[in-house]
Image (cartoon, rainbow, N blue to C red):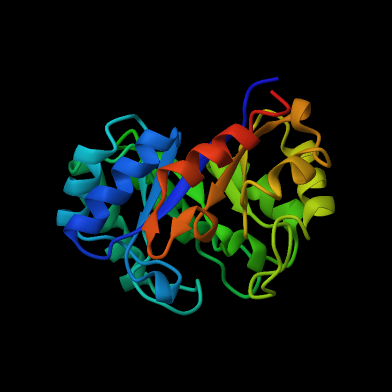
Length: 243
């Protein structure tokens, strides 16, 4: 069984800390980073300068910037979808390997808007991650099938409702169901309070041999406000226990 790849969420809080955070994620063995600004707003699209710094200091494949033009809900207007398309093009131009976005309207996937965004990413050779807006869907079974049909490469979820404050450990039952449903068709990214201490217990509850699974971490790998390479390495090691 392959090791569970680890993704680190990095906030853009100034060039020097961003450089250090990307280097720490790299040195700690993270497979990828999700790059965001304004983490207090749960992550918005980074600036061009942030992407350039991250690309220099996280040189392996796996730089995935957030595409989110504003805080609040995930129901974007046509004008905002157009802005997101421009941000996808910008990310591709600065060497991103993929993009992270999510659009949900009244608990459902708005197909026309999502087709526009997936096409914009696919046309530029970018991998696509549908972020934890997935947890705001009313029907996760149908949502998973809809995103597979749209061509999503990855789906991030805690297995619990968006805004509940619950962790992926709390959502293990649904995560297991989603992994089983997805099989090899789409990667399920475990997100929500992921840390080295919880990882073995969580992984033991999941049908890892039936699908493609990775894990996403933020707060658990910080020391103060900085990414700690030792904590990243500990998480990477914890995810290899079942490998």
